[in-house]
Length: 88
Image 1: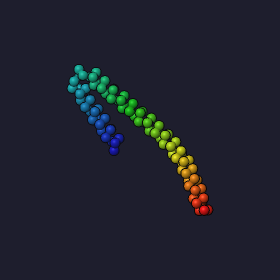
Image 2: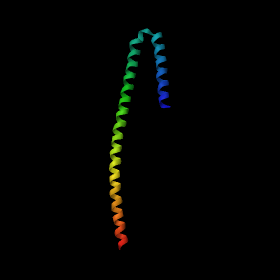
Image 3: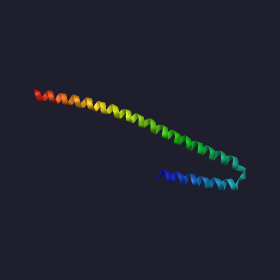
Image 4: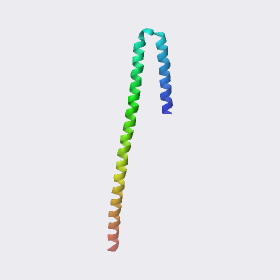
C-alpha cells in the first residue's frame, strides 16, 4: 500500500508539473530543477534505506549468534547447579 501511494504521488506531481510546464513557459528552468532535485533526493533516500537495513540485519545476526552462545552457557551453568543441588 505504501508503494501504491508513492506511485500515486509521483504521478500527481508529474501531471501538475506538466501542466505548470505548459502554462508558464517562463518557469520551465525552475520546474525542471525542482523535479531533478526531487528525483535525486528520492534516489538518495532509497540508497540510505537499503544501506541501513543491511547494517541492521548484520547487527541482528551477530547479536543473535552471541545470544545463542550465551543461552548455551547459562543453560549449562543452571544444569550444573541443579545437579549439585539434587546430589545434596
